[in-house]
Length: 281
Image (cartoon, rainbow, N blue to C red):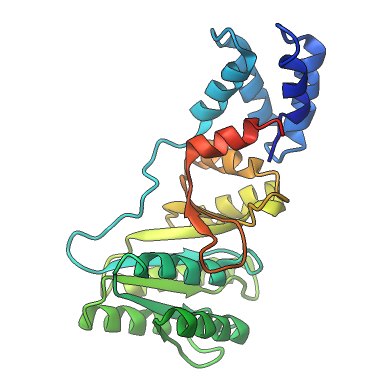
């Protein structure tokens, strides 16, 4: 990521940071998808820091902006853990569902998939292909069928057959935003007639910048989002949107996607993330 590449190159050669250095850092942060408000907050905190090292001041400022909420999956204490995965089309949502399920399954858990993105045949087919590869069962419905019906059937089977985890993919686009949000709310309510929803994970594409923050706000208004899966954080994305989402919405990033392979989904590590931001290479 290297938001501070130019800044670091200067401060590592000098003992102090000039006003021009701070101005240049401001420009770097704005270009890194943090937004003006967050950028100003970072710089103000860094300047007031008592640290003798400017880089440590920046590290402290960035760390303070991250959410303090748990980053591990919320696990049901009574049996079935249900995870609802939401987000707009094109973010890597369906692939993230498969990656997450594979990760959970590799730990020895029984996992069932629900293909509730019924309005997009390609999404159902994609999830079926992934399920075959990783040896999992996926519940599907008719093309353009009722997504909530698939979610209900998935929850019913998962509970009846003693699955430990249920991961449900959802639609990312309907006729308009209001329709999409209403559908997601309906899906969650239908599932909860059978079993509680333990996690609602929103998939955000790191390359979309501030648009990702807008998506997070919109989905949070419709469904109680519990965590973020940040995709395409593979070096091409600046990644500042992670800080923006955590700071403005207090939503913890729980997983990051860094590639297309089934294993390219890892738990989000705040310390590694901050170090990556400060990496001058």
